[in-house]
Amino acid sequence: MTANELMSALAERLRDPTRLAHNDADLLRALSLAQQSVNAAEEAVFDTTDFTTVPNVSIYPVLGYLPKAIKIVSVRQQERDLMPVSLGQLREADIQWLRRKGGRFEEYAVIGRGMLAFYPLVNVGVTLSVRYLKHTDNLTAPTSVVELGDEYVPTVLGFAELLLSLRQRKFQQVQPLAEAMARFMGGDGGAEG
Image (cartoon, rainbow, N blue to C red; front, side, top):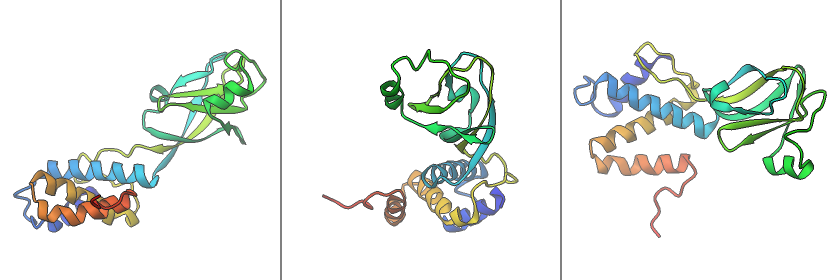
């Protein structure tokens, strides 16, 4: 599906089929943000990248090596999966984990959102295959391809409609959309307490 198809559907939902109130750039921006938000919530678009380590280095910045990664899902060395562990588990298992050397990587830990650690250290560079939740590309033109599957289109359109309705301060229209998005995101739908 292309962005143009989503733009047309969104313009119809906004009761603006001629796109007078919302130009193409506004529609593309809202659809990009909606696609990225839905992907992050639903974990729908994954990618795999080969990653070569440096000898005797155990910690790597995720952004530097995997700039499109939202969340690391798995790491493989050839046909073998490395075991995911927390930083605390690494520390508890081996207080010298940063210096411990071995013949091959056994475990990996995601540290915060920006670092990836491997245990134990190895003396050679190793090629790993990292699978991650991908930050979807911005929709920059009507011909841009939408990365989410068709099953997510209604949610993407609803979220984009919510964003643009808020921008226009159409608060009566926003309430049902906001409740639907809150249910989708796991919230309480705006219940008052």
